[in-house]
Length: 225
Image (cartoon, rainbow, N blue to C red; front, top):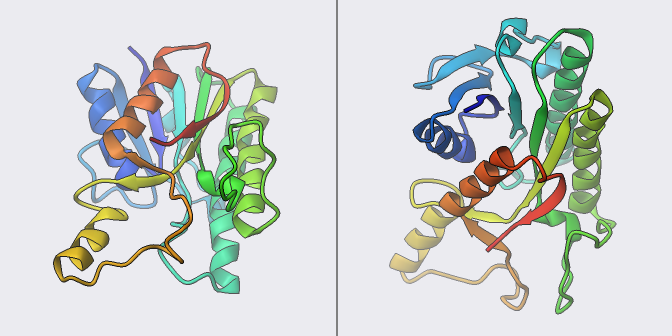
């Protein structure tokens, strides 16, 4: 079993993933901006001020990097677009520089990305070889993944999950959709004709678990149903 450190571990994915990994015998700790709202050992960090608790690396073998401002949490103002990008790039940069400058036992870096990498591909079936769309999300995901792939230069195994819309009953996209339907106010996304790539939270967490348990898993994978 492995000792795992999860950045962004207090979000929807992090909470479910920490529980799954703990139930499978792994030792899990979190990186968060606050230590007051988690049942797991939590180290406080702040990528904006380059604050990193070096003791978090003492026994860590695997880092799962989920940190980043929510893409659907706010309107995409100029300032929030900046936050979406830099909350991902800056946090990865802090992890990279910390590992580069200190002794550690980390051998694997598993990171999130988003299915928005591809943009709206219409009827075209896309796989991981398709180039990024030339739009905000496509370019954001491209830079996001580049910030994760740099860990290969430190000799780490790197795997990246391009995540679709995550469905979970207690949080995320599903509850507001269910509420609208129950109020007979449900409506399709956009014009209702585009495909929406989704994944259930349990399946997503098992995909991360598979990447942890199998050292042949490297590179980019679509995390969709």
